[in-house]
Amino acid sequence: MADSSIPRGTPGSEVDHTSYELSKIIRISGHASLLSWLFATVGVLGLGLAAYGLFNTIAHWQPYDSVTEVALFSLFISFLLLVCFGSSVTMRALAEGLLLLRDIEENARRRE
Image (cartoon, rainbow, N blue to C red; front, side, top):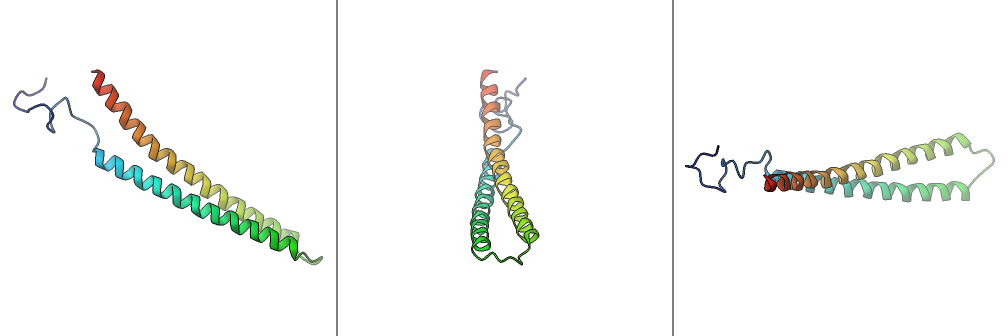
């Protein structure tokens, strides 16, 4: 039962009690979104590096060049792209998920 000495709408009343601070949720979501774009940018730069390296390798191919070096380079770039774009998607999901969970909690509280 709510304490009648605490007016509604003030911190500490049962009606407006939340288990989070809105400013922290928005700040964490913003940071996750920023990291998402950072990872995506690094991924795009890596993709450009991969395209340049592949073009350069094919254009200057010599019979004595090792296929293993090309395979390792391709594997490294593929791993870089996987990590960057995977991290970007994860951070974006975290950013949107936090805001979605906040909205779900607010809607559940309104129905009570």
